[in-house]
Image (tube, rainbow, N blue to C red; front, side, top):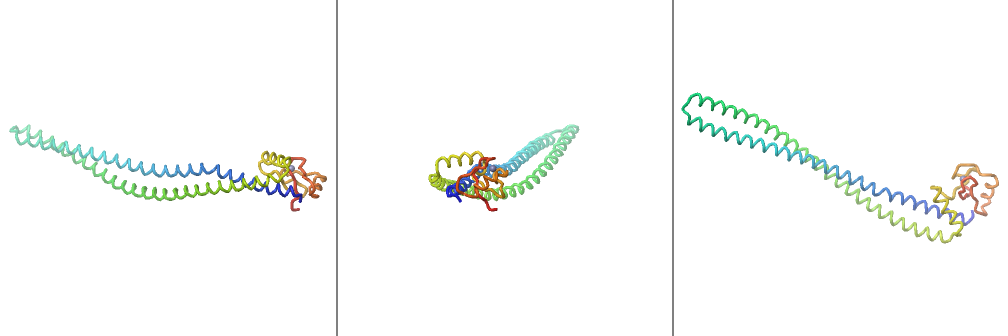
Length: 235
Ligand SMILES: [Zn+2]
């Protein structure tokens, strides 16, 4: 094979690797954002349950206060009842006391329901908290791995870049220019094999003359269809 062609193939290999690494580096912020959003969702879930718990406690305290005011009313009424000498007033006060006592029973029933609910919620919070801690551990590890990967990719990219510079310096400037233009415009490869008389870049048949010039390997030959530089592939 033409020695410049061999150099171009090595150069192309490094440039393809660099391109792959750059693509990978670009996905890292997305991966990081995805992990961070998972972390936030898990923390928000626990916070929502805790907020519900605080709400239940507020409601329960309110019921307790309501019971308290009615208990005070009852003791005030009992004093009045003790002091009255009128039978109908005594009876009326008795009814009022009964009304308050009924209200207190209902309030206490509601309070009991809230306490049962709060107890159930407490278990849910503990479970959610435990799972959120596990999620945090896993995600922290994944974020650290991502950071390590990011650094490794940067180093690899630098090393390949240095190697690429050294290779490019050995190649004829015009040929290098042609290669670069092809490499950047084609998106995949600038130098491709001819297999069974077909250019593997554009998948079109090359002319017999082109095929034999490629086979001879004495010069740089381009595909007449796509312009890629050709080499004789495994037949
Ligand atoms: Zn072609």
